[in-house]
Image 1 (cartoon, rainbow, N blue to C red):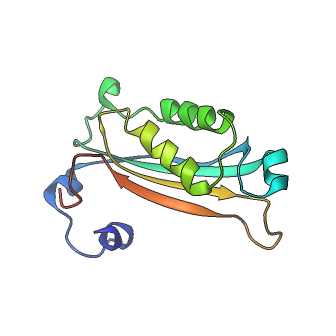
Image 2: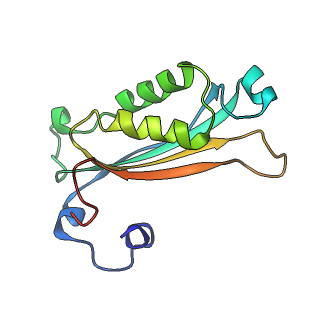
Image 3: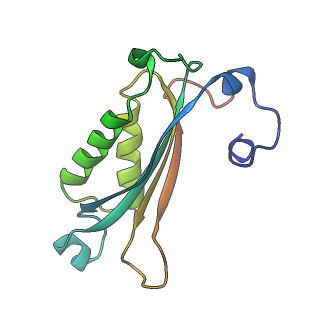
Length: 139
């Protein structure tokens, strides 16, 4: 299922074809993250990106029924300010949980990258993908 979703191969289920995705790309903020002592003592730049897949078809121009990316950005900023986080995976898991506060969200994919770890790498981190608890991957 994940491979088909990422690459476009295969035939998606009817519910997948009917949905829509809201994105937040490359939100860069300062965060206390990491397991090394220096990382615990100094905040560092982190880039967060999120895809939120809707449970329902695109509702047209009815703004009240659209997933609000401003709320997603506010939640990410709050997580970054909430105190030290050991792992990028932990940050991403918190973002997934926050995104599911909106009942319109069916699936979430979150990337969290530390930007200043290796001078020859754009970023290092983790990507998590979650389906709303209580719903199977198959639909």
